[in-house]
Image 1 (cartoon, rainbow, N blue to C red):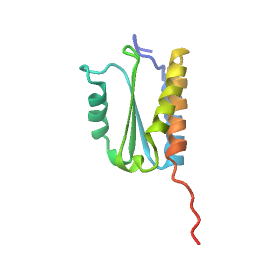
Image 2 (image 1 turned 180 degrees about the horizontal axis):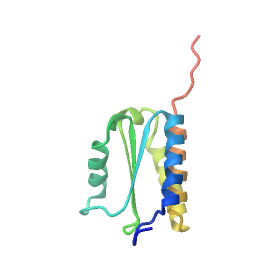
Image 3 (image 1 turned 90 degrees about the vertical axis):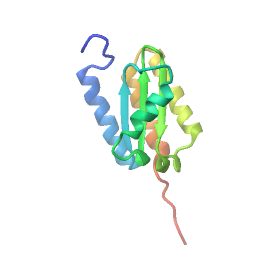
Length: 127
């Protein structure tokens, strides 16, 4: 693990698996950025990263700056049709709780799983 890097190689592999499962269940893309944010506006930084993704409308970006204790979640337009602000806030609260307990990986895994669960399109029956 590099000095100051909050995730080990094993953590990164576990996180990749969590992301794959989330993408398969929700059919949306998940990206994670853990590290320092440039400037004071963390939301703007997260939005710029999100806009650079391959399919921003179908993507969820989680940004965590452990040094500043900041979590930002940016969702694309298609994702917002299935994922409410309240559901995002619950996921952020769950991540914050895990982070406070010292587990960056656990927080990310829990948050991604919650977001994917809530973003999953509902099966509807039509008569």
